[in-house]
Image (tube, rainbow, N blue to C red; front, side, top):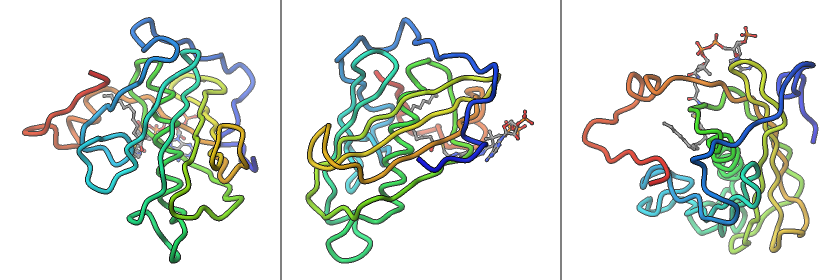
Length: 179
Ligand SMILES: CCCCCCCCCCCCCC(=O)SCCNC(=O)CCNC(=O)[C@H](O)C(C)(C)COP(=O)(O)OP(=O)(O)OC[C@H]1O[C@@H](n2cnc3c(N)ncnc32)[C@H](O)[C@@H]1OP(=O)(O)O
């Protein structure tokens, strides 16, 4: 991964600690919001992620690139692939049960991804420093050990729940967090 210093844990960063309320190993993570583009089952054209955590710290997720996810004819749009990485990274930091948002997302696109490809996405936290969480992820084609199509590194920033109340529209919308 060609990552910048912004997404590299500084000296003194500490390892993440899974929250006891996070789903146990192998249990599905479930959607955090039914209309989320990444994980929401009610999103008409979303990714419909199926995610779980094998160890309470790493997230593994799968989705199939569909007709609605194209950039060039027959190929996944890079922004959609970046969204998939963002979703997996965001899901992995939510295992800590603290609200974070993406501050910076870096992506390396290594292979074109045809429509119909099943992508196996993995994400994990490499360190925490104050409000900053450092994350990495990858998406492999066709199988968990298939060729790497995308690598990502990110800086997430811890926020309060007020962030979503102040900036979002939670009124009148069902907002679930891993019900
Ligand atoms: C309710 C629970 C939900 C659960 C969801 C589960 C799964 C979800 C999955 C969903 C999908 C996935 C998730 C999504 O897609 S989240 C959606 C996409 N992201 C956003 O909308 C975030 C928009 N940005 C902001 O709200 C603010 O800018 C934030 C909150 C990030 C910081 O503003 P705030 O005023 O609070 O703090 P600060 O400005 O003092 O910054 C603090 C520190 O951070 C450093 N910094 C900040 N940005 C950057 C940057 N770009 N590069 C390098 N550094 C950066 C900054 O220099 C400072 O460092 P230092 O000076 O202290 O050293």
